[in-house]
Amino acid sequence: MGLTGLDIYKQLPKKNCGECGPPTCLAFAMALASGKTELSACPYVSEEAKEALESASAPPIKLVKVGTGDREIQLGDEQVLFRHEKTFYHPTGVAISVSDALDEDELQARLDTINGLVFDRVGQQYRVDLVAITNESGDAANFARTARTVAGKTNLALVLVALDPVVMRAALSEVADQKPLLYAANNDNYEEMTQLASENGCPLAVLGDGLDGLAELVQKIVDLGYKELVLDTGNREISRVLADLTQIRRLAIKKRFRPFGYPTIAFAQGENTRDETIQAAAFVAKYASVVVTSASGKHEIMPLLTVRANIFTDPQKPIQVEPKVYQVGEVAPDSPVYVTTNFSLTYFSVEGEVEASKVPSYILAIDTDGTSVLTAWAAGKFSGEIVGEFVKSCGIEEKVNHREIVIPGHVAVISGKLEEASGWKVIVGPREAAGIPSFARSRFAS
Ligand code: SF4
Image (cartoon, rainbow, N blue to C red; front, top):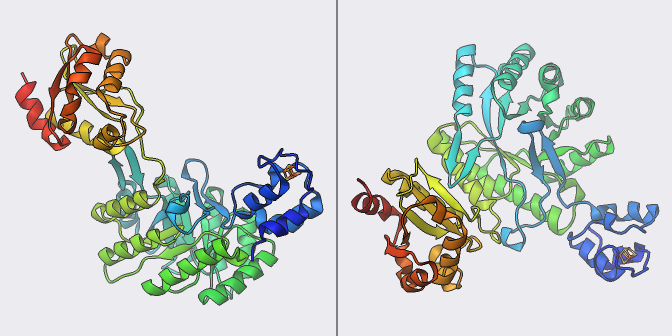
């Protein structure tokens, strides 16, 4: 159970100096209890108090890292149950499984497929994060060889899935420097697995027997001095897994129950890869830190990554592009000029359609704090005066030999003010971006 603000206050120096940010020790204690600040912000806390307050100042869910360098993926360190309360910080790592029973050609083909799971979408690159190598052969040498091949031929973090410490040690002799996630310590092997994880500085998954069994096993491993942990209750039925993940998250956040204060891993299982993808999406939503699936079709992974992007987008911060002049294609001085807002979805919709028109063009992205055209217009952020000012100051007048600008059809009403403010002739374009190709071809194509 976490400490309350008053519990924390009793341990503070009570100087009320304000050096920590809040004006008083009590205000600091309340902020610390709700996870809004860190104990280190007060320079006067005694060592005894620091020790006593550790559980309150530690994040409710520990940050655990898998992989190194470009391969590193960060798990956990979440603060809330629901995204609208604050935000979610670390997107679920998507791991694609690879069996060590594959022959060389099959393995190469599988890795080619995994390496191809990269998608460009609204200016962002979506990709999978991990490869989960499973010891289906039962053979240590096979497992080690597969791990070495995967590490050499992908740029993804690794999960080593083997319950036999001898087999795990063999793979670690090849890829320990990649800091893979070791899956898993259970009641039978936890001492050896903890030693392997500790020796090699790798995170360790803990495979419990239900929630109670998991809490007990985590405590045993923590008592051995190791805390780089990722949790799995061992249940595999989808409703049970969702209930477990939710309980773990709830107890960690609301009750500060330390044995559950770690990231989680879930395995999607189904009769076919479509079912697996649906399960994986459910686990991304609530609350897996890593989800492992054998599904690897682009038609399966693209929707899964899209769901992830939606859930891990900060709802309080619209995704924006930089407000500036963009070029699409090989522009020339007589290229058309479009104007839109800097809301990513709006901007990339317009950019995609301008590109599809095959008429090289400029696009002016106005700073509307990342809101769409109509929202920005209603809020006074996309008025004729504001757009006109941008046109005059953004440098487009030096790039083109004409003075015509295409505005979205939805805001035809700003035409007069924009012409007044900029001196440019306004052309009212289509209401939706999808109308741009036919509009451009009929108006600008030579
Ligand atoms: S810095 Fe420490 S002593 Fe000063 S107000 Fe903050 S908690 Fe109190």
